[in-house]
Length: 212
Image 1 (spheres, rainbow, N blue to C red):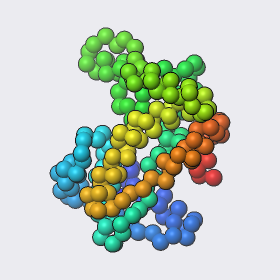
Image 2 (image 1 turned 180 degrees about the horizontal axis):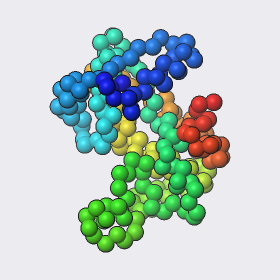
Image 3 (image 1 turned 180 degrees about the vertical axis):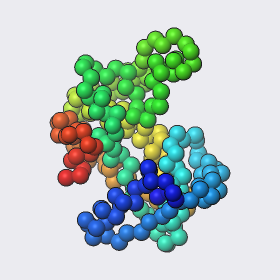
Image 4 (image 1 turned 60 degrees about the horizontal axis):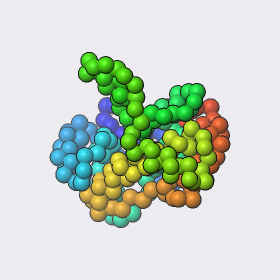
């Protein structure tokens, strides 16, 4: 959690889960000074630019685990993607027709929005150039042909592979800690992507199957 900031504080949820499964629970709080002091170290341990502010809390959590003499830990990377935890998925699933311009859940500005901000002609959103080969791979797989499966397929290849996994690897290794991602197990991912998107999405509250 963050000192004095409740918006992104996940400690309450952690306590609830710990009570439910009967696990030992410890909390790490980051204050303003420690956040700022760690920025240079965080950037220094990244092998490439990573567009994820969660690098900082992951760095501090990894350091706390290292201080407790731990060498291996599990992380939750991939759960939002395979169990539809992002709000953006809801509006896209509700759209009619194919989602031709979908590129990643992490995209901050679509082409149209970028053009508006820059005062240029708004135009239309264009598919990522990688999409043609990805569509071919997707069509040749045994995965469900649902919108949800396609979005997860894209996000695993782009957002998870290029941002989330490098983040946890770099921030963990900064403290000689191996962070493993069980949600990226191949059998689990393939099973999840073949579940009917109505079941995966549920009432739209986020990750209904995982919560059950």
